[in-house]
Image 1 (cartoon, rainbow, N blue to C red):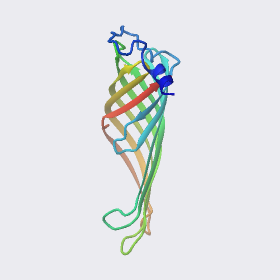
Image 2: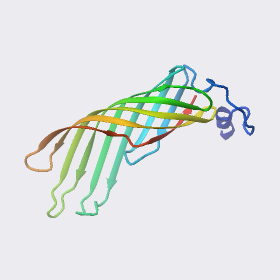
Image 3: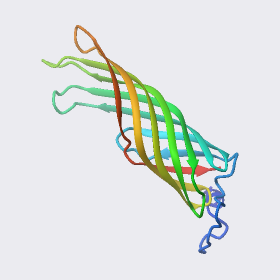
Image 4: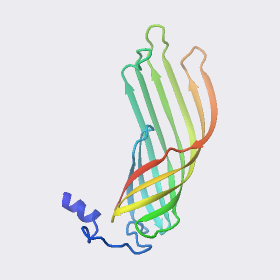
Length: 194
């Protein structure tokens, strides 16, 4: 099994230093697919399924899920739970494909929601807050291909979001709308092409 994976990922010249010709990143051939896993940065785990549509376009569907179930919150002693799910399309437009590094412009659109709950104990009331929202990101990044069919990508940029939330913690539930703009934290992803 390990040898089969190595045969797919490693180039035929593994062990020898070979210069990659410009515009010959083997994984970025139209029709190739890939899976990606973003390294968590506190916002949950992001998983993606991608397809190379042309020499310069890679399109994906991203799923960002977060689950946190903590015993006591450390302040009130209440049990805390948090669940979130966001999905949406993402796009990478490659600016250049020379050598093993391909710089790109990154965009995505997301839709999803989250629920936060805290149990009631003593003088502390129960909390139940939900949010739903839309988001869009625009950034710059680069994808490095140290192996024939595996890459490490990183990007950063700006993010715009609109959310609506409802707090059912009190006798009179409150609804709030929010629009926010800011920078994305740097994101690092591992990608396997097939």
